[in-house]
Amino acid sequence: MKFNAAKCKVLHINPDNDQQYRYTMLDDTENFIALSKVNEEKDLGVTFESNLKFEKHISTIVNKAQRVLSLIHHSFDYMDQDMFLTLYKSIVCPLLEYATCVWSPHLKKDIRKLESAQRRATKLVTNINHLSYEDRLSSLGLPTLEYRRDRNDMIQVYKALHGIDDINWMSLFTLAPSNNNRGHSLKLFKKQCKTTHRLNTFFQLE
Image (tube, rainbow, N blue to C red):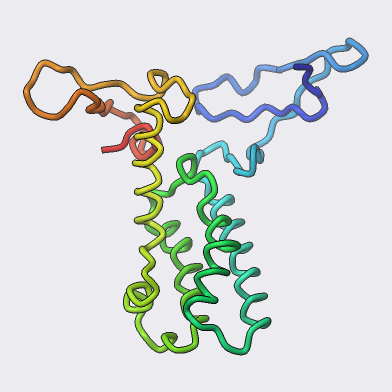
């Protein structure tokens, strides 16, 4: 595959990286050009930041979801539960749950920001908008977004370990030592981490 040098960027994540180093690449004319350095870059629909906090990505998808919810609100005078679930699951949830294994937040403020989108969405249902958020979820048969992210993580781990997804899981996870009688053959080893970012990644699941 030939890369377009004009579209390639340098994003430093490790703070110990030598950010003074100049990265270059051959362009179409076989001349070396310097790659520009950025603090954030969008890749496959996810905005990565140099601090790996994904705050901008979360704000972006919540704003998109809010705009869609506003459009739905102004398009229907009445919204029953079946209508809502069809619309919400088909055009709002995908915005809030795409690639969550990559960017799933651990900070309470980000968790609350994401949940606010579903909190607002459930108020669109006419006959239950007077109920509390928890009661609205119960009536609609919906879990919290945080629960769905945790569940999605576990599903992805299961797919990786059982060969359902075609990935080299050994490069992502380490099996726990089998020198005790507790657990099972696919029990994962949780490594010690120096940063909270690493501690709360998809690869450090309990």
